[in-house]
Image (cartoon, rainbow, N blue to C red):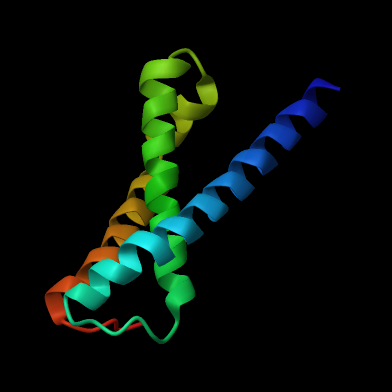
Length: 105
């Protein structure tokens, strides 16, 4: 039964982060792009997942460093090279359009 609760908690975290990423993408990132003269068209879902992953990283850092310091899940996640490579990739996806002046995705 404990495994089911953990699985439901992880699914809840996933859907909450996806919803928050969607809201941040369309209510914060879209106006920021458009005010910089960047059209918010194309594969916008790439930007959405980039924002969602950034939120996931911030959530992991806050939970792992401040709230649940002894959790092995957060310790393993924060020590993962793949976790940080995806963080760099999501930063690229979200912030490169400001440097290029267009959304390349």
